[in-house]
Image (tube, rainbow, N blue to C red):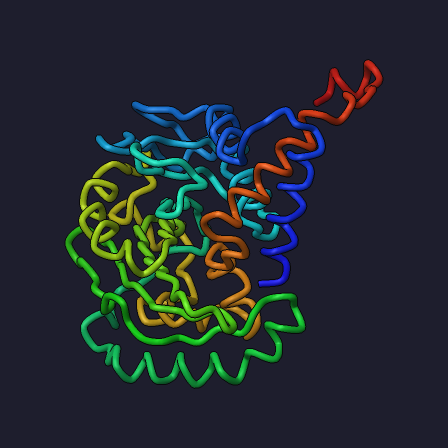
Length: 299
């Protein structure tokens, strides 16, 4: 909370000193306008497949997504982000902003034999116990302690479509506002496409309503779908359906540090807008960096 107050106060003092801008809203509007959204068909550079941006959404490419996640939302650096699917009718710094973050985990072919045998209530209890035990490690790694409050949407595996999805309700540190982490996994021949929706709990119904169109928007490239698996050529993952939900396949501290890092909303609402606007304003007012010809040519 102290960081939030300091950020807001700093921004307001700068605006007053310069006397050039009436409010932080003008800065955030300019920042939002600088983002270049895309529609239509998106071909991912890793060749894993294509995304046909669904109606009511727009797409941010990998570079811009990293800027939003790291610079605006305060998350660690991550070069694995492939892009974001964002609702058409709101900006990235709006109070009710949310997005589907797209990544791909090349983990091998995930067998789904255990899908019908999992007791998800028991699994939840195990996750809650493990989360408490791991909070000390997470804090040492620079992350807030996390409480797994419960299922926001109980895990469900669509065996026909080879899609697994579930949602957790989380509490970060002492934050009174709970966070929604809606996970979608589309199983493929050599790995899993990950769609991770992050928002406040108040957006749960809206996120759920958009799962179907977002799922139908992605298609694996020829030869990369789940049914293309060749047991003589392809590796089988150590992960199972239950393992994907529980995160047991990752190191103890790695589960929450990696899969849930995008839920670490350091600044929300006005605070986010103020801090992001301040960063943008500094970039606009700083003198340009002098770069040599070789560096520019290779960038």
